[in-house]
Amino acid sequence: MICRRDFMKGLAAGTAGVAGLGCGGGGAVSGPLSPPGSTPRTLRLALPAVGETVAVFDGDVALAVTRISATSVVAVSRVCTHEGCTVLLPEPPARTLDCPCHGSRFTTGGAVLNGPALRPLPVFAARIDGQEVVVTVA
Image 1 (cartoon, rainbow, N blue to C red):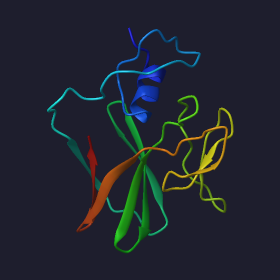
Image 2 (image 1 turned 120 degrees about the vertical axis):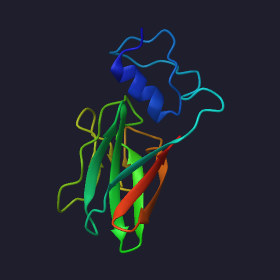
Image 3 (image 1 turned 90 degrees about the vertical axis):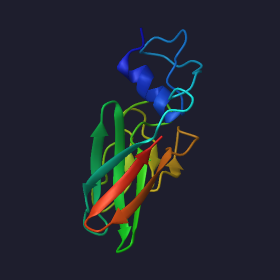
């Protein structure tokens, strides 16, 4: 049985099957996130203000969606690529996604600012459609 933390770690790595892991430690992740040929899900949410980051949850998918400009948004996983903890939403003045477990910091676009995480947060396709943000979760 896969625990939620391992599932979220697998989700961040682009996989869902987790073999031989306990919830407390690291290990190898294997297997596809979605069955071959599965249809991506589309999430719709209210358009945030420019510079605002909002949390989005859909089942076991936790995202941070940031409106970068009047015409641009970015959606990233909130699962830290170091050990799978959920990163916090940005707070002024830093405006970074910070991991409360081990101190990794990411830009709202998912890039690593400081470790221990070495890999960026996974990015999901996102666009503005009228007064909504449309995010595609594959």
